[in-house]
Length: 322
Length: 311
Image 1 (cartoon, helix red, strand yellow):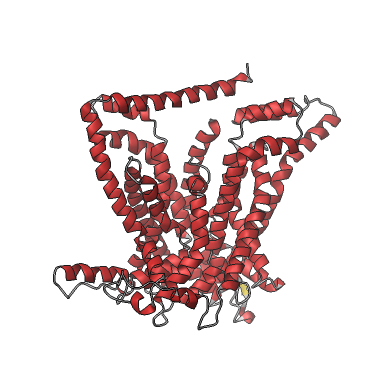
Image 2 (tube, chains in turn cyan, brown):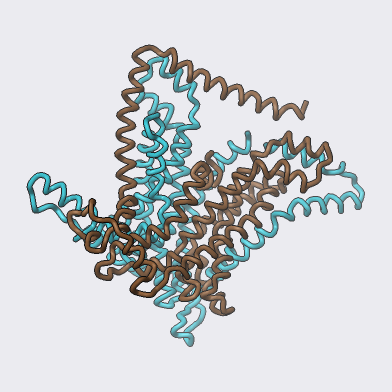
């Protein structure tokens, strides 16, 4: 693709001559080529990069909109506070736990589901559609359903089902856990794993279906067991798809706000950084502190993103090279 | 010779895939009795397991739909009343039968924000994708990764300046400001997706059109559009879904006038007596556009979500 497009572009140019006229013409052509790109690029720089620069500046200010008289330069005070304030430190910790556990669990379950869906069986299309459904519920709505209809300790579906199962065995003392107050972070993780597993499954299923079948068949002919094939052929092939799914998932889940806001309102140690930052600037009006926390999130994301970019890039190069 | 290279390469790939298909079919047809039976038995077991898990995963959604058709007293029972009488009461309540609070303004706001931002994204992203695939600028990969890196920057890192700016210029609680935010939120996804779709336009056809002296507009209409149309549709649907779902920006930047459907849903966060059926009805109604858009884009969903990296 790249070589071919480059060829077209060459035939579009006139042969470069060392005259000033030709150079102007070449420059005009280069700008004509760039022109369709510029509106999108400029728009994006204004709306995303400019605000971040402002965030960076505010993060070095002592600025609380409720005490405007005390506004001034603060140096690294805000950053020190982000890293020492117990609530914000807890938020950093919660963000890491939340992201890692949701990504790992949904990747593993997604892998299992993708392996099952890769086989032919009756009603596969419908089963696939049912499995995608969790991803297609508005996140706030999904969190509301988990909070009120599934996890509610008195009439939620989970405890209701426990009551029903126990009654089948003649018991009227079923366990009735209250996940939302006993293990709120687990409740958030559970609902997010439910929503993100379909995402992982779709990416891994696409990976499985792009697997070169001739090697698998050759291995089968040579008498390799299905475990050997999975271990030595399928898994290595899936590796980059798992990395891609995991890292894209991590980027979305690090930023999660909806589930934390809806399920627990950030209570009982479930406030992650996005929620804590929202609280800090929206309710506490601590603009400087909130900005410093925002910068910390960006630094964390850059670390994850460097790996993500590398993975995306390797797949991208493969695709661009075709 | 050089003009032949890409098509020749393409032919070899085509041959290889054709051969793959052939060998797979052969294997199925003439495989030994043992190897024919084993996969079948595995598939039945795998099918059963897949169906059980599919039902388990879909059960919250199915339960949400069933509960939305129950009366409030039947909705909140332990053990659950699965066979309770069906009624539309919860939907009437959601549309404001007794409270008088209509969910239409927030839903119309969401529709406005999602549709206009999607249109704006496409208007900006399609030319950009053109300049990154069909007639690429120099260092187009760098530009691609710049677009992607903006998606990786968390919204919280930019939201305060945006909020302060909106407050200063009086754009707070204004749906048009939200539309601009959603446009920038979806731009990287749209550019990446559109580039991967435009890269599928056959180069030979572009060359042939150029040799025949076809102008840019004719090339766009006759060659690029037919190939890119399904991709544009999928991109539009995915951008629509992301805008419709968004909460944080809407929560911070809008209020009474421009509040969107997810902001409206946050009104159900704290319990208000017997209201489970109403919550379910609200969740169903507000999720319907996303469910439709998602199933419509099902074939291209993976490509979109993986930013075009996976086909």
